[in-house]
Length: 333
Image (cartoon, rainbow, N blue to C red; front, top):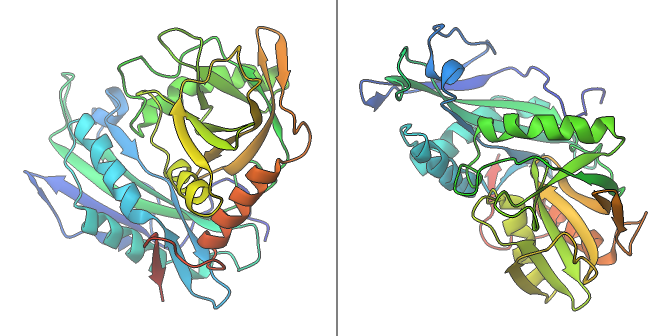
């Protein structure tokens, strides 16, 4: 399918619901994929915007299943609360996602392809205000589009440049999924790509000594002692993919799970490393360039055996080839 890249392609319907005078309207599906906003909408001037990313997959039996929408709903509530936007009830969030997927079932890529239906719920402040105050009204919407993974559906290890810039502040917005965090990442990512790297790695904003995030994805490592390690920081987005990988590592592979500091100049205990997220799924990391000192992980140009197992199990669950381990999936008939 020619559309299978990580880019937007228009589908048949998207969902919109407005919050005015303290209450939500009923919401509806529309075929138009553009919005009309007042020029003084708070999303345009003060960044009142939160979003989510999740996926739906075609199973071998032809049914479609959505991966962990209830976790996205909970994270979305936290993001909206931080920006003083109204919460969407968890069941209402999932219902809106299901309705939008149902209305676009023909766009879900076939079983056996590298594709999925990417789902983008979002909320923006659409009311007018000149002062830097919360909007008087909001739009909650859901957009879907068929995609491949962010790194072209490949498990080819990538090379990363360790950024001198910060993605977020130490006690700021890093744990929430807000558009501003991604805007703040773009400058460093652009430098990395100009230098010939696939992406950048951000260090902790307080000391610049500890690994935090890979561009727009979580970092994980596999130690010599068979421990699944992720950085310990309040400024890292709580990745649902990473949460799922921790479960798989512990319950499928019998590994120990650790949330700990990973120092950029002390990486020899890691035999594998990777980036994970909804868009990337899992991307192995080949090397990190820190102040022109390049650390190459032992796996080098091949995917590590543990990373491969994690990928196979995760994608097997997503596509219905492996049983749902703990009510992760919502099936759309």
